[in-house]
Image (cartoon, rainbow, N blue to C red; front, side):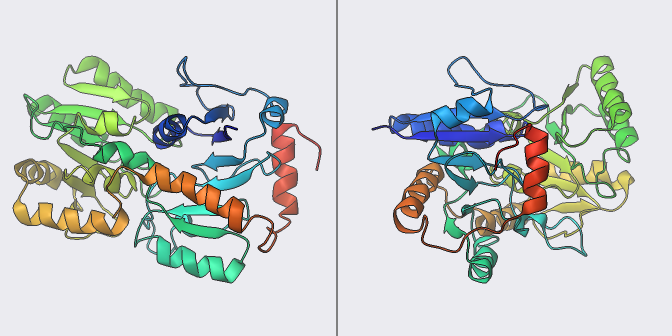
Length: 348
């Protein structure tokens, strides 16, 4: 009998994360459906199955629900699997990365490598109500499937600007003037994308208008992952975890006031230094590229294109060996009540 899986989507970045997993589910001859939490945009294709109501989810009866976000409807049937929306990367000096916050929703955490697994294993021992499997990140299966990348093949260098949304860290408001000036004075192409949580309407409109007046600037409200990365030679960013994803393609990143700079980045503190840093990144100095490779191996050591295979195998292992046999998840009473009001579902 074929298995039913469910994808729980609350932000648009989920599509590029979950689609490699969907391909593996289909390859196995099993079924997968999507539940899209409003107001997230619906980017599904005709081939993809959507469940639009809670009752449809119960009728579908998935054995596992996969979520790249920080929460999931606990009342949905099936074990809850956290596949993450990025790599563990501290944005603020004074805080532990939110990547490691345990909120009591999940049965399984699918970690990515040395930067996440050891700490999650400690949390597994501490809490006891979930299991940790190092699978690699399902999103990057397509990064390592043998496809060719357009590194240095553009007529003019293409710069991807993709800032984080976090207030006090995001460079989006600081760098508009710099990017506008570089777009006017340099023969570079620009792709500008924003995190779904960056919701400053006035700022978004400014970048959108820049793209409408400059033929070498493209503005897309959201980043489409690998499809976007392949078009760029260099990324300009700040302290977003998307930096690691881009560097997995062996492409350099210039950062503005990164909170944890390292020798794998070209970090600048003054916007006037951005142009020179991008010029250096375009030249791809060997030492920088070697440092990039070493750094990304710490985050993602699984580069065989089979991370999604390991994620589904982890689900099977948990159901066989741990479901109903480990400590119960915490009651989370207040959070559960809030989620039921949000979903207009009032059963317990």
